[in-house]
Each structure stands twice: as structure tokens, then as C-alpha cells.
Length: 354
Ligand code: PHE
Image (cartoon, rainbow, N blue to C red; front, side, top):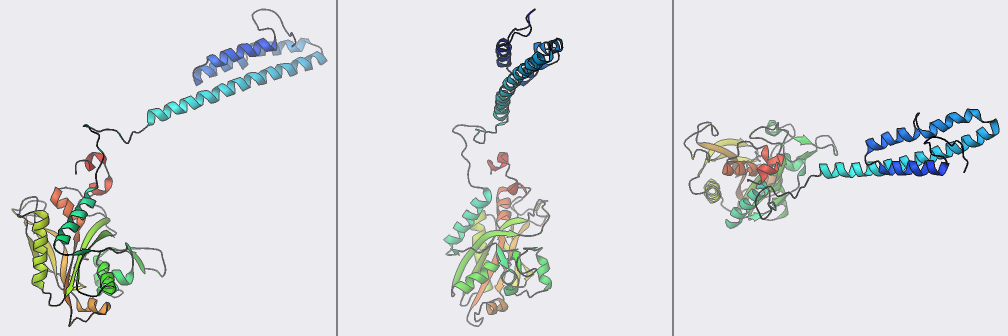
């Protein structure tokens, strides 16, 4: 170790310089403090810089040697600073993480902690299935991605049929253009069911549907329907009306009734709109029901002969009815939810209430 410069308080040897620097670096407890220490050790007013200045007085050989040593010392101190900085950055990062931590198991209120429950739409679907199971219906499901044939054509809507405009369809970029769709209703499951089993059929078919709707208080582009299908001998419109009324009182309660209003669907004839007593005002008339006392829940009707033809059933032997309505709408009505969009937003403050 060379004694380059030995006076004042400047550390004398390389070893002393590095040892002192090491102590100072270790004493820096934050990144800011380390930056200050770094300036003191390596900056223009550092002992190192002071020693650098003395080099000029040496003869060339000694200067080169001393210069190299000084450079080595600088390198060691820089390495100490860098190592300390890495440690402090790690700590700072860990502290930031700890501060930002979101405790998803947080107990919002109450004891024992809230463990969550099924989403309202799922519970509504389960309850609807239960009611229909109690009435002797089986439960079936179909795919959410459908071909044009199942979603439209087999339901008596040939290509370019104007009734297709009743559904704002989302097409998938699969196969030929406009041949694969996100199903706009659960009615295609009627077709699949009649293809897969011989009558009699008594079934409900719940599931998710998609329409190119702009979300508002009563429409969401992803929603749930429950379809019903009965195919048997001698089924009449009275069976349809009775089934709807039985279901309505079973699900909504004794004070809520149903009524059918003439309507049009390509796959049922005659067709009707299915309405229930407004659950908000009990039928007296309010803003929600536009002062009619009734709320529309879905559509229904007698299976059209063209639909039987599409699945190869003889409409002289078989008759039937179908209905379809919104599960989300049922939940909205029974729980008096003013805006349907909350069902998709997943705000835990709301979800734990419903
Ligand atoms: N699929 C129709 C709709 O989504 C409802 C419906 C189902 C109508 C069954 C008649 C029979 O609007």
C-alpha cells in the first residue's frame, strides 16, 4: 500500500480510504442518504479528488502507478455504493409493495368474516330451475356459440328474413362470413333438444345470450335467458297460459300474476308477450311499469309447424309451446334493482347486499 499523501485529516492509505468509505456507505439508511454519501466519497470535494490533484506533482512513472491505484480505490468505493444502492432499492420496493397491498380477504364488517356467496344471477337461475323442476321439467343446456342455422334458420328465419332484425347479432369471425354467431337467445336449444330426443319433451334451458345492445338501466349486452319447451300430444294454448301462471306465482309469490298479450315471433304461432304484475307497485301503476301495472318478462307461443319441420317432427302428431324470458330481468324485478348494469360491474359493496 502506497503512502501517497500524508497530512491533514485525509485518510492516509488506500485501505483506510476504502474502510472509511465502507463504514459511511453502510451508514446510509435511505437512497437519498446514499446519494449524499456518494457525493462525499467520489465527488469533486472528496479525499479521493484531493489525492487526484496531487498526482501532477509526481514524475511520470510514479504518477502512472499512483493514478492506477487511485483508480482501483475509486472502483472499490463505487462498487460499495452500487451494492448498497441495490439493497436499499430492494427495501424501498418491498415497502412500496407492502403499502400498496390490497387485502382481498379484508373483513368489511361483522364477525365471522364474510366469505362471499353465489352471484345473484346464478342464484336466480338456480331458483328458476328449482321451480320448473318442481313442475316436472328437465333442465338442458346448449352452446353459447351457435351457427346461423340453429340461431335463426331452424327457427323459421331464413337468410335475410326481416325478423332477424329483432336481434342485434354479434357475429364471430369463423367460417363463411355471418355463419357463426354468439347466440342472441336460448331458442336454438329448443332445436338441439328436439333433434336429440324424441317427444314428449318438457324442459327448460337456461343460459347466457349476447346482443349488440348499448347498456342501459334495462339492457345489458351479455344477459341470461331461460327457455321453456313442451312437445307432446294435444298441447294447447291453455297449457301454455297455465304453465306461465303457475310458474309466476311459484317464483314471484301469490300476489303476482301473469298475462299474455298478442305478439309475433317467427318460431311460434300464435305468439304472445308474457307480462307479470309490476313487482314495484303491485299493479297499481308506477314509473317502472310506465303506469300500466304490468312488466314484460319475455315471449312465448305455440311451436310453429315450420320449426317442427326443421327437426323432422310431424306437426299432425305433435304440438307444443315454447317460452323464453330474462333471468337477469327476473332478478331485477324480484329484488327491485333499478339499474341492471350493476349485475355486471362486480362492485363488492353491492354484491354483498344482494
Ligand atoms: N327467443 C325469444 C326472444 O329472445 C323469446 C321467445 C322464446 C319467444 C320462445 C317465443 C318462444 O326474444
